[in-house]
Amino acid sequence: LLDEKEALSRQSFVIGISSTGFTDPRTTGNNSTRLQTQGNAALVPEVARTYTAGIVLTPDFIPGLVVSMDYFQTHMSNAIAFISGQNTAVQNLCIASAPTYTSPLCSLYTRPLSPGDPNYTTPANYPSVIFNSPLNAAQQQIEGWDVEVNYTFELADIAADLPGSLNFRHLLSYQPVNTTIQLPGASPTWAVAPKTRQTTFLNYAVGDWGFSLQNQWLSGFKRNNAMVTATSQNYAVPRINSYNVLDVTIDKRFDMWGGDANMYFTVNNIGNTRAPLAATNGSNPGLFYPTNAVHDDTGRFFTIGLRGNL
Image (cartoon, rainbow, N blue to C red; front, top):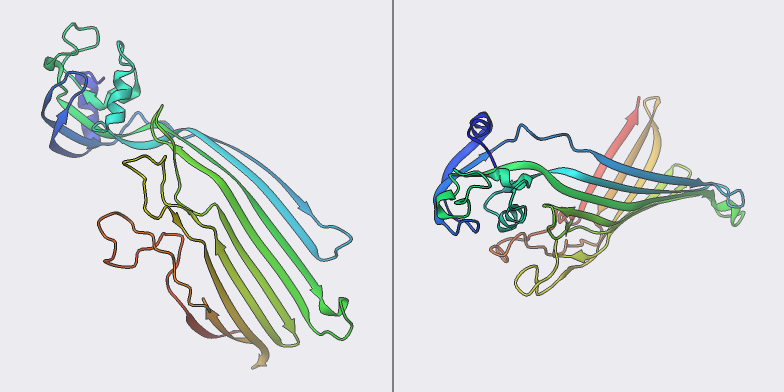
């Protein structure tokens, strides 16, 4: 709870002031009060503990092969989250700290009476100000794997009459955990994003010519970012499908004005793959083609270019 001196000191961080109706479960009062959106000078730096481990394999029995694997895990227990005193969960967590009301969330309400006053739970203690403010209240956990495979070899190593060289490179990122707990005791939420992302490069070079494929694949994922209930996070189509895009490039190297040059022709998204539908909210389906931020709905397009070192 804020005393008068502290409440005045926070005025310098005010972003906006308005009036709002508010039902107060602590005093059962239902009235209009001041809603104040502001900063918080008492914030402390976020501190995260990150653990990583990795390994690189270069087996002698497969020359030219390099495999690297990295594991990462991050825990943050005092993450900054913008919290509204109008939130029912915030109100309940403050009340749960009775009779002292020492929860940091109670600082989002200014009341005329102090804890211990016999009239503290009566309408006489209806809050005079409700705050929307950032607090060090959230927790976040991220965990995953990054894998890279790189293999280059001459086709003549397979058969003497085969020309050229082949390079295979594969990048994989697997992140099964990306969870946030916005408030102490609140249910966790998670990122609405693919858990697995893969990009594969295949390059064939023979003489001055090159032929390249680049394939990007994103796994499917759930639309909900919290536990499904009968009244929330309950989608008619609960999953977004996986997404795969293939780009093709042909290039030719040659001499130009005493320097090296490279002319290339690229077809991006050669299959003209459409991004899966992902409506941003319930009010706009059908008005445009909504996609998730991780998807690109540009469609097939062509690029012709010339690069050179003179």
